Length: 273
Image (cartoon, rainbow, N blue to C red; front, top):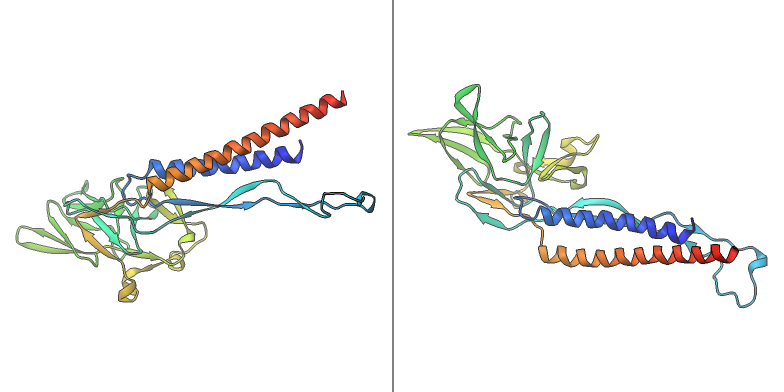
């Protein structure tokens, strides 16, 4: 297989991955707290073509020692954690993060994860009918500053401050349910997407090296919460569609290069015959 076919095939593979990434962004644009994924590309290994002294003929157009590439590939996928728009819902369990932070949650498998999606609800405790948990839409438990599940009295009304302090009111009794854990990523590249809006630490990473409690930061750097609202995704459909059409065009050109290479190979084989 000649180099032109290899280069076209490698490029088409990388472009297809980028198309899949854009499609995933568009499919999740209506999900609360979804963050846009962005791809970075790099050249594959190149080879320097050396020329012997016998090939250095007068009038030769090919430069000496030119680099021969083999296409490009997708090197990294990064999450764009920029703020999405805030939408008011009026639901007392809905929370929107304003600033750079993540909620800490505990999945059903006992894995600690992180999310920007604040469309929470109250789930009764099956072991105690007088108690309930604050959970995500998927049923993951929202954690407090101590890393424990947030527990409130069943049927209580919630009041949540901008710092994340939860007060549960039942009749005339007010109970403090602790402070919602908000963590600010200082090394966001060490977070990987688990599923949808959930993120986890990459293999071997320690939470303390990647995230810090937003309450420990200077006042101007702290994130805050807005009760009765959620954060929309930061995906812009116009930008995604424009990039999608551009990438599709690049894919067509790479496919045409592959077809041309195949045609040239067929001609060469026929000449030999």
